[in-house]
Image 1 (cartoon, helix red, strand yellow):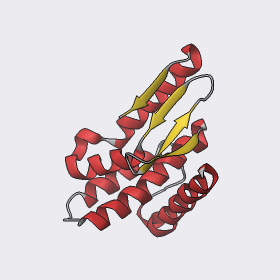
Image 2 (cartoon, helix red, strand yellow):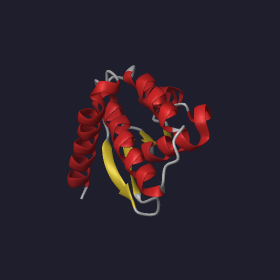
Image 3 (cartoon, one colour):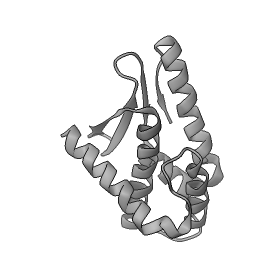
Image 4 (cartoon, helix red, strand yellow):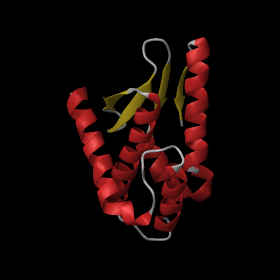
Amino acid sequence: MEKNLKNDVISTAESFYDNFAHKGNFDFSVKSLEEIDALLDDLSDYELDEDDLYSICSMVGSYIFEVARKNYGGEYYWVQEKEQPVLVTGEPNFSVSIYAFEKVRGRILNGKEDNIPFYFKGYIEAVENGKATGYSATIV
């Protein structure tokens, strides 16, 4: 299941890139998350139904996951209770988990308080701490 999940996340992230490349420099770098945040800020101005919101969360969340995986490694797992993937970085030496779909949804619905670059900075700090100390965390 995880191999198919990984392929699904990668293909969804690539689909995001294909569909939104004209909106920014989405090169899977950490810096590109600033443009993701600006795009989500623009999208928050629209009334989105639940299907549109899920689609955006899936596409943009997959892109964020791939930024994390390409830059810091990790494996995808499906979390049935949350009906979404999680990326776990650092196993077996440490464990830092992120739920990107939830964060994208929060950014659209709650605004700047769910800033994506700030969220990702917390993930990076947790990964660095994990490498040094064996730290385990879920970044929310």
